[in-house]
Length: 166
Image (cartoon, one colour):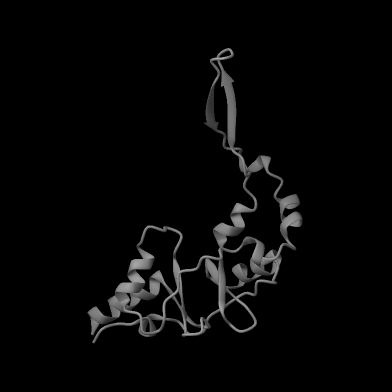
């Protein structure tokens, strides 16, 4: 018997709306032990995904590159240095207030890898171990794109462990 996405998925999916704000998502991360939530519209169609790293990106400086011109005209070269500011220098309280009411749709990743319930375990594994290291969970959608489940990496590992123990 071959495993499918239906065998691996968790059907009780915690989701957020594109209209929810960042403060609501922070509360959900505190309440549930998930590192990301599918973003679904009013028809339960997956329109994005929001992860902890999406929210962390709100509080990191956008430009950490310092450009230093060297030499004399017309022989001016530019060197770039990566400058990492310590967290202590960032005013997280101000950033939190500034970003708390931002809509999830402004922060989420809209390009979401999904599978259908009949997808093979190999299809799921290809996504989870593929070239995109940010894929830690795969929403399972029906033919209309409505969410019916979600598969996290640990769900796949658990399924293989359980099969070995049978």
